Image 1 (cartoon, rainbow, N blue to C red):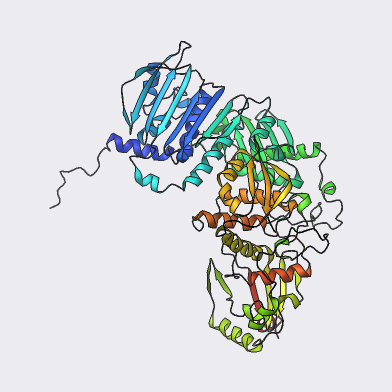
Image 2 (cartoon, one colour):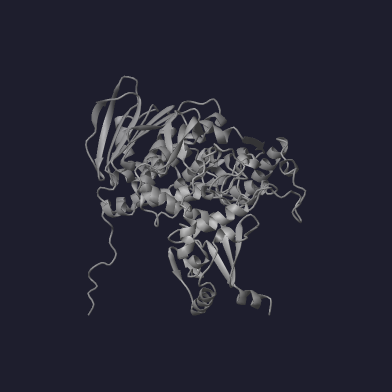
Length: 640
C-alpha cells in the first residue's frame, strides 16, 4: 500500500528560491552590468564609472554620484522585492524609471560576492554591506562620498553549472561593450567611463545633444550621415535618426529603439522604418536607425520580460503607422527621393515607382567608392595600373603553370571529383553523380588546358558560369573567394612575418565603441593577417600597413566588415578557435561581393585559385561554392 503520509509538494528552501530568481535576471555578466547602471541612472547620477575584469566574471564595479542611500535603505536594497520605484500594483502600469522589480540586487548577490557602499550626504561618511552568495553581513560605516558603489566579484561562484554555459570570455566581453553602448546613447547628460581589463573603452563626457552622444558612441562616420525625423501627436512623440539611403547595408550595426529612454526590441518599429525606406531598398539592404519614442507609461507594459528587453504596447498597429509616417516625412523634408539616388539608371522596377540601384548590396555594406571593387587578391597585376602598382599578390602561387599542366593540377581534371551535395565541411554524392563524374573523367583523361583558357560568363554580377566537358559549373563568386581567402588567412597564421605593404599615409577609421574594442582586442590576429593597427584616440584607429594583395581603397570596408562579422558572432560553434574565427572574418570582409563585375581574367583567376584550395566545394560557413549541371540534366529540363 502506498505511503501517503509524506508530502509530495514542499516549499523550496530560500537559497534555492534566490538562485531561481537570479536565473531570470542574471543571464550573463552583461545583464548584471545593465541592472547596476540603470539603478545609477534612476538615482540621478551625472557621472557613472564602470570597471570590468575577466569579462565580468572576476569583477564588475559601478560607481555613481547619485542620491545615495542611508544605512537603513542600504540594508533593504539587497532584500528581495524591495524597491523605491513602486508602491502599489497600479504603479506597474505607469513606470517611468529604468529599474523597478526590486529583485536585481538581491538576485545578483545570490550568485556572487557583492558589496554595496553608499552615502546620502556630503559629509564623506557612508555605510557598506557585504553579501556572500545570498548571505548578508552586518552593515558597517565606511568613508564614502555622496553616491553609491556596487562591487560584484566571483560571479556564479556557487552555481558553476551556469558559468559553464556562458560564452567565451571574448564573447562576454563583446556583450558588455554592446550593453554599454546601448545605455550610454539615450543619456547625453551623464558622463560615462568604462575600464575593461585595465584599458579605457569608453569615455563619453556630457553631450549637448542626442546626436552628439550618438557621434561619441557610434562614431563620426555613421553620425555625420544621419537624417533627423521628428513627429508628435497626442499619443506619441518620436525622434528618429536614420542613415542616408546610400549608406544602407545588409546588416547595420545599429537598429536601436528606445521607449521612454529604455532600450528595447520591437519588430513593428523596425518594420515601420524599413517600410519608409522601401523605395530605396535593394535586395537585403537595411537602414541603420536610432529611434527615441516617448509615450505615456500607461500605454505600455514593461513587466513582461525579466530583463525588460521587450515590452507590450496597447495599440501596436497605431505605433507602426506613426513611426512609418515620421520617417517618411523626415526623408521627404530632407529632399531625398529614389529618383535623385538612382538618377543615372533609367530602368524602373515593375510596379514600383523607384529605380534599380546600380549595385546589389546583398552581401555587405559598400560605400560608393567601393562599388566596382574587383577581386584583386587573385589577379597577378592590375592591367590598368602603372608599372609601380604592386598592391596585388595572388594568395596562391600560379607562376609554375607549365608544371601544373603536366601533372594535371589546376586544370579541369582537378575538379572532376567534386560532389553535388554539400554540407558544412562535409561532402557526399549519389550513385548517379558518381556515374556522371566517371563519364567526365573518361572524356577528360588528359586535359590540355587550364581555367585561364576557358571562356567564363558572369551572371547578374553574382555567379560565374564555366563550361566543362559534360555540362556546366555555376560558381558563387563571393562564396568561392571566401574559401580562397579563408585558407590563405589560416596559412598566414602559421607564418611569423606575413607579407604586408606599409602605407605612406596611415588610414584613420572612425568606429563605434564596441567596434573599436573588438578590433583592438584582436590586434594580434589582425597583425598575423598583415594589418598594422594602432589606437588613434577617442573612437578612431590608425591603419599603417595592409596585407600585400589588398588595395589601399579596399582597406576601410574590409576592416569594417571584419569587425561587423566578429561583433555579430556568426557561427560561434564552428569557429571556437580564434584563428579560424578571424580567418573567417577576414574572408567575409575581403571577399568580392555580389554585384561586383569581374573581367574575364578575374573570373579565370578566381577558378584557378578556388581549385587550388584544400576544399573548393564550400565556403568557410558551409555554403556551396559550386553547383554542377550535366548535359543530361540540361537536356531533361528542355524535355529532350
